Length: 227
Image (cartoon, rainbow, N blue to C red; front, side):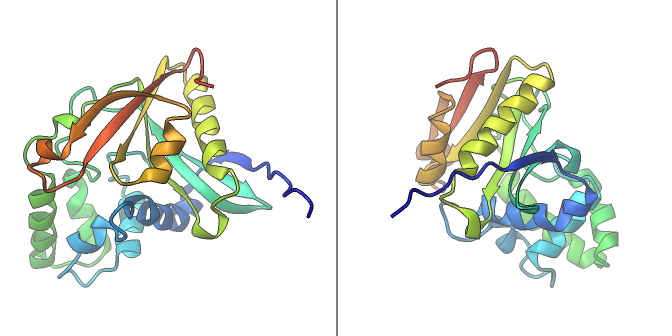
């Protein structure tokens, strides 16, 4: 049996035309380790599916975790296969989590939501993302978020290539450090990150009143990548 040929992807910046792909990858990134996206639960009662909502979020530049221009796209044979966002975080914790609620009116208008539907979503979202969000305080100059490889293209080294591309983007932006975090139980992602980063801080389940399994934040210097 011949050895599998290593695939070298093309790296490029995302554009508005990639929004449908970014929405799909946002869903994939938000599934582990629970098996379903937290967006699905938040959108119950709105009559809107998750992909439609996320496309509207990106079109309205309403993501706190990277605008479209912050995303890196990996392509194989001209087909997008993986992505992540590399962005400069706010200096204080983002109490609103992944969504900028200040732009909810624009999203609601784009989706033709009534005020009742908008308020239903807002209440569900604030229930999840209210309270202590100190764990979101940035640990580095740049943060990597929404890391995902398309299901049909996993196991081919694209995760490693994505981290390498993120480090290159960070250096091109002149940053000294870069960070990422992983929810406990997402073992594949954690194994990948530990090849490139050093643990920075761990928030165990007790921090979240045991309603969440906890998470670990990682950090790496961009002056010398971890081997």
